[in-house]
Amino acid sequence: MSGTIKQPTAQRGGRRPANLVDSQLEHLENMVEYVTRAGTAHLQHGFDHEYWEKRVRLLEETHELIASQRQRSARLLERLASEARIGLKRRTAA
Image (cartoon, rainbow, N blue to C red; front, side, top):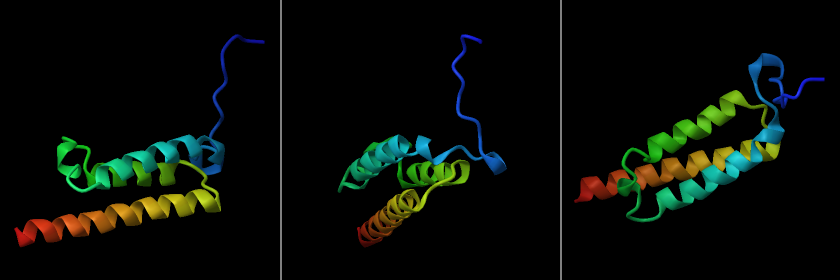
């Protein structure tokens, strides 16, 4: 027996198991909440809506999500898209 810690192997198609996703989704939900608060999005220095959308999409592409995780990820993407539209309206109105 070796002394190394085995990482969970990727499932068919190279995706990682769903049980590794919940903590990452929680982090993304917290950060999206922070980023989408009024006035904070442009203070993030590169951590804007696009960055967080890429993070959510990467999670979707690299993990086998179960239904509830797909719903959480869809809500995150919708919130980011909604806030991006609102931000665009604010900039064009100014």
